[in-house]
Length: 313
Image (cartoon, rainbow, N blue to C red; front, side):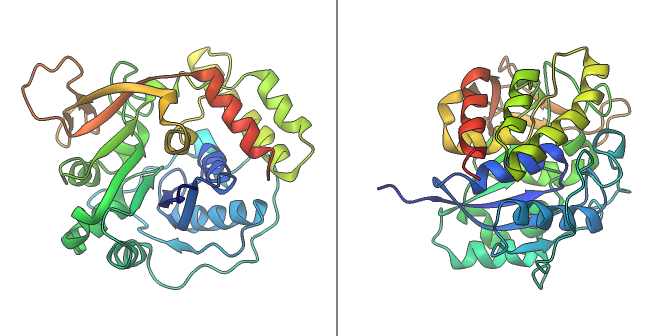
């Protein structure tokens, strides 16, 4: 029997973050050591609360949820209530969490966990802005070589951006943090908009979730209904992209995704392109690759995996 892969989920829930967390908690291949919240889709007071709401929905009150950075490294926080609603989890009213927030700062938990666990044993899974990750790397550079891999949702190349014409939201919110992570030397797997915009929900899938008759199934259907309205209006697509679950799906079934190992730079000064992930897809710069930048996903197999796992909760 293979050992479960140890992960820390760093997140700013967000409906698609919530689906990603549920997928991880339903998957025996993964051992979630803790969840760290960061400001992003909504402010930190809501993201740390939402993370606990999701854990309770999954029946995992035992999980530690830590609050992390409330603002980007050097910039004012930009949020996305226009997509996720005032709470970040609009779409269904869920009970207030009764599990307490873990004591201590998320960044300290990340550092302590990486120092305690065997080198190369822990994978970091950021689903939001990279502020907590970068802060941990700045505060404790000794942990950088101990990270097995970072699998993150962020960026876009062929799809452009979703918060500006050039930038995807997670990278745009804290481009300086992204630059620290992308130049850290840690092996990176990136799920950009190029992939997540192919992981589109369908009406059949959403109704199938509702038809599970479980609390988790109803929540997933309601969340998807809510943010689907925004995406279908914006892109004219059939459904909503499930961005963050791509990170967790990759950890479970990496063969669902294909991409290229390339050099990716983060634009931190651009007048029109701040937060752009400058992906050298055609390998024209001659720079050494620093990221596995995904370009495609087997959509049907991805949704089969999601259905099968969320049905277990």
